[in-house]
Amino acid sequence: MMQSFARDMIRSNVPKASAEGSVVKAISEMTRKSIREMIVVSNSTLEGMLTIHSVLDGTINPTTSKVRTVMFPPPTIRPEDTVEIAARKMLQSGVETIPVVEEGNLLGAVCIDDILEQYEGDDAVEEFMSLSPITINEKESIDTARALMKNHRVNRLVVVDDNFRLSGMVEGRDLISILIHPKERETLGELAGIKHHALGNPVTSIMPRESHVLERHRLVTDAIKLMLDNRLRAVPVSNETGEPIGLVTRKGILRRLVEPAGRRALVQIKGLDEEEGFTVGVFKKVTSEYVQKLSTFLTDLEKVHVHVKRLHDKKANVEYEVKVRAVAGLKVHAATANSWDLIACTSKAFKRLEKEVTPRKRR
Figure 1 (cartoon, rainbow, N blue to C red):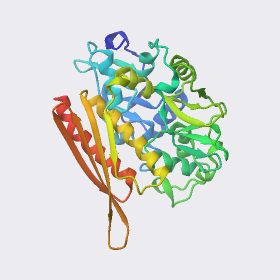
Figure 2: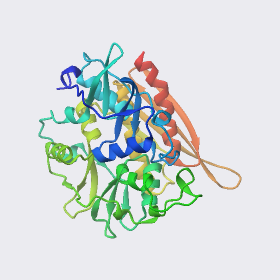
Figure 3: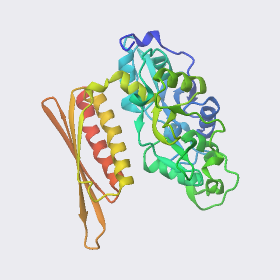
Figure 4: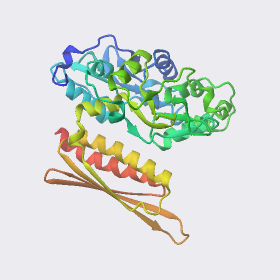
């Protein structure tokens, strides 16, 4: 499957946005079609890509901003490139749609759906799921959900009740109607100077009415069918008592198809002895995601060492220093970052490491 060619999977009718169009119009179209990104064109020429994350961080006003101001240059492939190349570029860039270009002309795109539906294995969901999903109590506010997504770099949260039983899941796209079409506004507050009173409502008010859950023993093919049939990007996985134990996602399945479990790098972490259990859990999740992403750039990645050091100033405030060292073949790549927030510091260190290895891989 991965060695077939992109030309055999090209979609010519992928959704497109105009570079001069408004962000609110493009995001509304994405919400209506249950998609998270759109190719941006100008006079039928590829200009960039827009994702639903463009409005989630609250740094722009979607009602007045043009698509051109928030789009970014997407990765592209050629018709003769393999599906594996398309899959790796999806994992490296974070997008699920890769434009196919030939001699400057946009032919269409290869989408993650078309790759996943070719899978015919008999693996169990628990072998492909990511562990320790970020959860939120069903009584918490929409604004808390938005902050958790931003702080933990995730696009979805598993919603639980007071007994930590699964209630459902919310994604970034569920927040869009609140962010774009608030019912009440004031001149001061959040989101580009606009305060949305709706953000104080409980997260269950935007949670989809129909919740989908998979038990750990179900097959990956069941998960793919459930996601494609219902336009889902992730499904929570529960144990026998209804507690969330993981998430199976489109990207997670794609990553396992590109990189079999036997090729995973060894990760060594030091310096977390003084941190709380929840923080350690989030740290390990973020580290795992970055290591997986690194392995798409460094196919010979063997080991990743992460060292955390707490630095105290004169007022006893804690600053973190995170050093990351990646061993790939005979080469060692390293990066260091400092921050008052451990998770932010870790992300910064890995991003610096990515910048170091990406140009070398692409040359």
